[in-house]
View 1 (cartoon, rainbow, N blue to C red):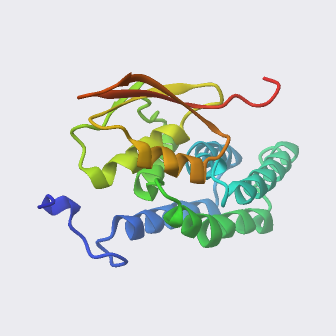
View 2: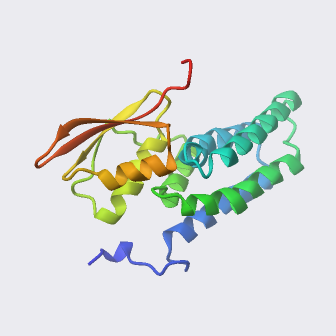
View 3: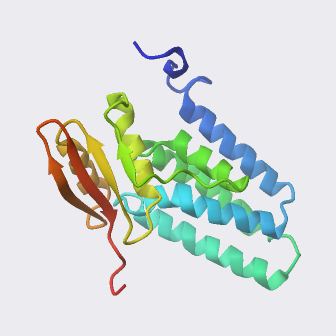
Length: 211
């Protein structure tokens, strides 16, 4: 039986995904109500490392993230050109609306994406806290339903060329199929140890072409 803190009714106020969407909308509300250029730059950086990063390698969301990063870059240029002047409201509203109405629903459907964890990481970055990026992710003591989101969350934080070691108590073939479906040609997978009681796999994000 799941611990009480993990029991919830899907799509209700107790659902962590619903709570995460509400938390992000509160962040957006504060930005709309008069964020300074520096606060907005911090948000764009944090969002790129969390929400955009998680969706950037997936086939179904790659173009969406490219569009969001393009519009975020345009917003940054306007901020840099305007100095201490607030960001153009229309550009900011369009960016935040796209995140709320398109990106978040896409992340909820993306296998392995853990929206509550991503939003928590984003909020932490806004407070100046760095998310944990362990070199080894041991999932043997983690309930099965929570293993893949933890692994994909760690993958989302990898820079091109970086990797981490997954430790599991079985050969995670279903996980590899998920990576192949959602991050085709974007990841590396190398067996370091192959059972019979422990599997260690080095999972990496491929370096950019020409790097």
